[in-house]
Image 1: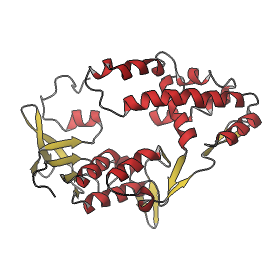
Image 2: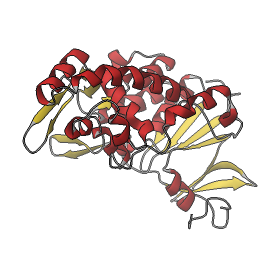
Image 3: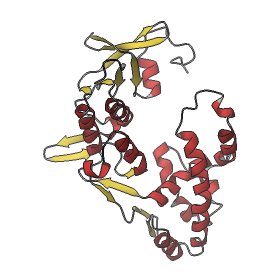
Image 4: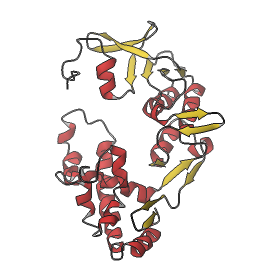
Length: 300
């Protein structure tokens, strides 16, 4: 451990906190994570009932390349840490009078569309080609910090603006490829991840079904919560500390800078940097001293 490197506190051992912890601990930073639950994972945690364990959050995993990259940057091989099982078919959708299996194999998917929604198999190739372009433009933007207004004026951000399809819904966008109502709905399953209906979800998110159809989705042996267990273990192997049953009551501020955290027990821990992995609205309403907020007031 490099004693000259900053001490970093992370609030919450959910997927974001664990990812930050893995990357920073591997680079020699003094990482301490404070988690109010008795286990890691947050929404990706588990519930144990007798000999049975249940995932309390997602039930399958997508965009595996993101997790692979986190493990690679932390000096680890994802395949040696977790057992990923690619799902085929990915899932089965039931309508009132028919059902369709959803595949990440383009030929199998085209055959299913032809069987269930004749004629709409033609739109699949167009969907994969056009949504790939949308994904390549937007993923680059979404993978970086866009808080600075100057970033929004950058050439790559401006060139990506048409890909947002502002004013159109996901259902509208899929009408460019599929004519049958149920065929369109078969590619809007992912809107539920955002808590939205296909008629309200912005068209830009049509790249999400593309991601599933191109990269596939996975089950993790032992449940998706096993990911959090392995990530927590990696942090501790690299010298990081995770404090369970340690709820953060409030962030400690010095002027406008966060310099540490106060636990519900009253204990205060200072650090050079603090990363908050709690939901933004929760953190703004619950973790900042009264009277601190200016722009993000509880009412807003």
